[in-house]
Image (cartoon, rainbow, N blue to C red):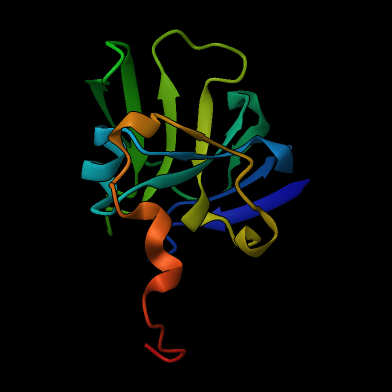
Length: 134
């Protein structure tokens, strides 16, 4: 599937070829901290499947919960998270952050990882009242 996306301010833009079956929810504590939310949704792909069409993101590296260094790629202007990549540079070691993808409404998660770190209330969201405009 061909996708395109950008950061919040539009400084960093990209195109990519992805497999929509490779969408994951990650509950690790790094993803929780980096997003400020209980989990992150990512499309896993090969690094060479991503083509920058705008400016380059800034990159920050840190060892993850599993001990491997993960590089976080984000907009240097607005701070939007865009990609992740690993020190090992495996063929499918990149992830595109779901929220940065224009076609995200077509990308449903197919698996969850690091579930031991999941918020204990995560499966009870349907019980909460919802307001359509807020």
